[in-house]
Image 1 (tube, helix red, strand yellow):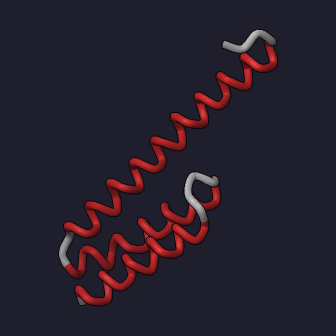
Image 2: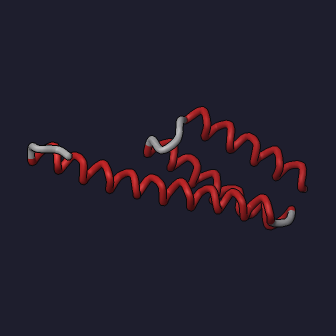
Length: 83
């Protein structure tokens, strides 16, 4: 455990950020799963919201921007194939 008060604070902040990032990541993964399970029209309606969630993950640094682009590309292909 940290000995200095500033290091203790840093550990608390890191734990808080980790929990927040896990929440956002899991919520987005669930949204992706629900979108894939939906039908064609419903899938295309959900796509903009899910893409926005993915972009926010990349902006926050939870995932890399290239991973976000790959996820959105794969989802867009599924949406277009389902039409």
